[in-house]
Amino acid sequence: MQPRVILIATLLALLASARALEAEDASLLGFMQGYVQQASKTAQDALTSMQESQVAQQARDWMTDGFTSLKDYWSTLTDTFSGFWDLTSEATPTPDSEAI
Image (cartoon, rainbow, N blue to C red; front, top):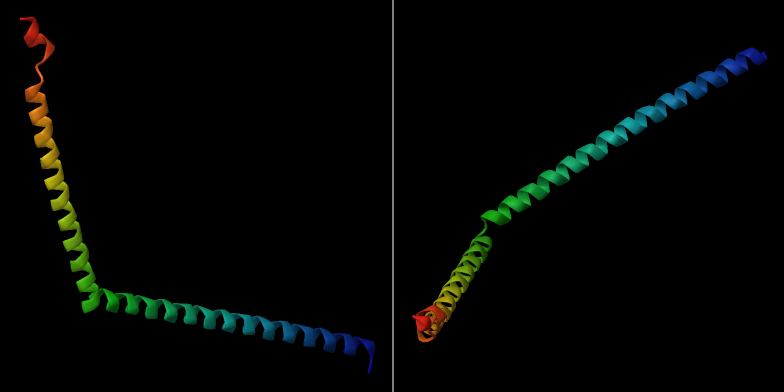
């Protein structure tokens, strides 16, 4: 064989292998994108299912009841202390009323 033919054959082989690797990379990228989309859809479905489940509803109810109870306790506590504050302010005379 002539050196020119060998050189051309070698260049064609390199070009063909580069094209094959490029096609393989594209198919791998497509596969990974499909996998990520499927995983995302599965996670979204699981989240939706959990939000709609009875256990999640019970947990939300429990949290709502807990916050309501805490709010009631805080209201009772502030009412009690504001009552003490009102009694204290009525019992101590102001300096202006003594000067008159």
